[in-house]
Length: 638
Image 1: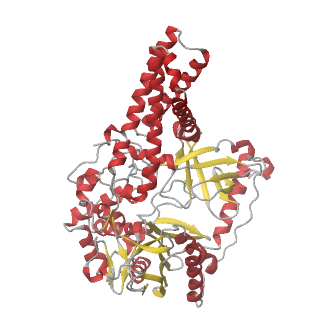
Image 2: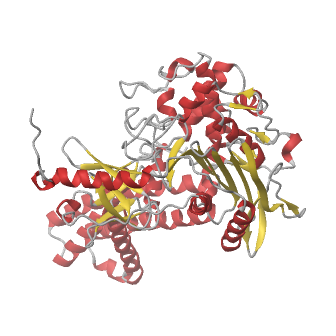
């Protein structure tokens, strides 16, 4: 058989582009995968300089770090103060930090322990392990495999219950899983959407199947075998290690003010763990050594390897989810791990299996949540420098750039309760084509430009971040993924959640309402000349305006006054304020009726027709606004 000769020019243009971009995409990753002979002789001076620079610039009171390499703890150190009043320094061996969602890795390890024992089936309906029922919203049931990859499809939730502050405690785990069960937004396995609830549910399953309280199970089957003596899921901490807890501080009026101990006990498996850097080093060593440390095995080797292997990708070319661990690619290296954030602590843990390297870092700070990620990126820049190939934007990109343009929002959100209104405080992600044949992407990080490197795949112009778009069945780009956020995909922003509808129109309506109220004050004498129906119309418009403005003002006061406290519960003022959207909506309907009557009677001048017409439209739009964002609060006042 004769093999035809052809040149690149004979290929279809799209195929040429795919081949060339594929080569560009694959080339830089090849040399970075092999194990590198790296010297860590300067590790103490390097980390000292990095951490102290972060502490100085960001005013971070306390930091702890541990690094393991090829089966050994090669560095651990604490920085700053554990207790300001006692002038107690941070100690890497004993000082406890709140590690937030890194706790989930212990929950997943517990799940995999029970799985290898045959007690948990990762593909079974989770309802078979519960004494209450997750609704059958979709035909496909939720499994532990879905929960491990954050693809269970639950909406998000946190306000009013996720965090308590000592001595207040939340309700028990099993009660919380029933009381705070979120709605199911997506069929399982379809999109990634980070869920604290789903992880806590997995912890409850561990508790029920093992017959041990979750915190005791982890203590007996993970902490004790690994000699992690300064770790606990208990809240408050056990007396034996309570004095080792690093205190949380916030700077108020120029001085550090101690904050109460954060309690996440109702969702404990999702983020309640406290630990020291040295203890976390032992956990990293066990996972890097396929489940065993110092002769103590917490996972069989094949289970550990399975746990670290890819399980779900929104796009196969991007980082994905392993069995609870998420992938991250830095300077051509595949890492697995997890980050963790509470109100007071921000932590990161990443494992590089190829290099047999593990890094844990935790910050006690309320001023910055990005230092934890920057620390590991800078670490790799220092020890594993990597030069991305300079990219040139395709000359014909403008022809297809428009299909990506628009606004996107994360699937990690609430749709069924008043917490949906939190979306009003989030700008989402905007994608805009530029004159340089790139995409300008703004949010959730700083604005960055991306160059097309493959079909629907883009790389950051001055970095290695990747983003990908996925078309629907009609070929429309409806889904977006960040390489660095494999646990949270995005969708096209629904029309009523776009900026014109959630910001511009409400703002214009509010300005009109304010004008009505100002007019009420300086045109009072004019009311006597109006007919009875006109007076009713004007008074209805005024009361509609007053109800809307009052709601906005009180909402601002509540957000400023309570802030993070809203995660612990809803104050009475929050509930009382929800009366005003209901009143405003009813008055808007009344204003519409009165306007129609006045128009039919021919009592209004053209100027007043336009004015009251605009006020009525503003009131009706706010009714739609309140309805869409679940702010019509009769479900939440009690």
